[in-house]
Image 1 (cartoon, rainbow, N blue to C red):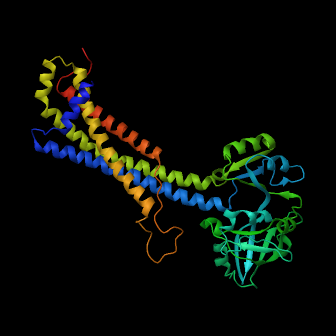
Image 2 (image 1 turned 90 degrees about the vertical axis):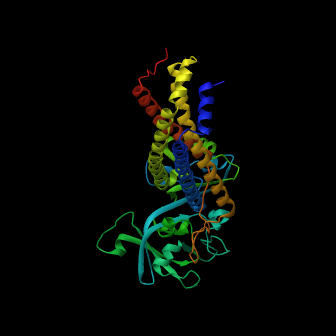
Image 3 (image 1 turned 135 degrees about the vertical axis):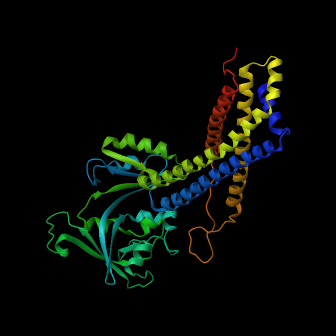
Length: 411
C-alpha cells in the first residue's frame, strides 16, 4: 500500500479543524475544474471548425496532387500516367491547369484563378456536391464549353447563373511575345457561357472559376501539358500508402501532396490559433493553481500535530514530503477530472443534439456550432494539469518544509 497517498486521500476527504481550509480546498478544485473545462471545450470547438473546413476543402481538392519540381508544367507525353492509374486505390486521374486570370462580366472585373479540369471531374460525387444544382459539374457538352464560377466570383461580377445568356470573358497572360502596351496584346482571352456555380470554402469561392481543361490548355498554349495531375482515391484507400507508391514511380522530379499539404497555409493557421488559445488558457490554469498553493499551505499548518505523530511513529522526512505532494496532486487531478468530465459531456451532447446554434435568420454552412472531442486533447489537458499542479505543489511543499526546518533528504 502507498501509505503517503492513502493518508493524503484521507486528508482530502476528511473535515479539517478549520472550516476555511475546506472552503479554500473546494475553491481550488472548482478553479482547476473551470480551467480544464474551458480547455477541453475550446479545443474541441477548434477541432470542430477544422473538421468542417477540411470537409468543405476536400470536396474540390484532390486526395493527391502531383506537380513538377523542375518547372511550372508537366509534359503529359512523358508522365507515367498508366502506371500511376494502375495503383490500387487510385480511382480517378486527371490533368489540371491552374493560372492567374482576370474575369470580366456585366461591366465588372475581378482577379482570381482559373482552373482547367477534365470532364472526369463531373463523375466524382463529392465534386458534384458543390454545384448549386442537381445537374452536377458540366464543363462541356457536344456543342459548347462552359465556365462554372465560385459563388463569390459570381457575386462580384453580378452573374446570374440561371440566366442562359450569362457569359464571362477570361484573360490569361500570354506566354510569348507579350507587351504591356495594351490589354489585348498582353493577354489571351476567351468567352464562355456560365453553367451553374459552385460553393466550397470562402477563399476558393471568391477567387476561382472552373473551365474545361482542353479549352484552357489551348488558351494558355499549354497543349500536351498540365500544371498538376490530380488523383482521387477510393474511400477504402490508404492515402499514405498510395502516396508512397506514387513517389516510388515518379521519383524526385515530382512532388506528391495530400490534401493538407496542398492547403498547408490554411491548416497551419488553424493549428496555430488552436495552440495559441491552449497556451492562453494554460496561463489561466496556472493562476488557478494559486488556490492550490494556499490550500496546501494552510493544510500543512493545520496538520502539524499529525506530522509530529507520524515522525514519532517512524515516518522519515521523505515520507512527510511525499504525503503533501500527493495531497496537492490529488486536489489538482480531482479538479481536472471533474472539469474534463463536464466538458466532455457538454461536447458529446452538442455533437449529438446541436443545441448551441449559430443564430436565427442567418445563412450558415452548418446550423449548430461544430465540435469534435479528441482523446489526445483529453490526455494533453490532463498531462498539463499534472505538470502545472505538480510543479506548484512541489515548490510549495519544499518552501514550507524548509521554513519549518525540515530537510528534504531522507535519513
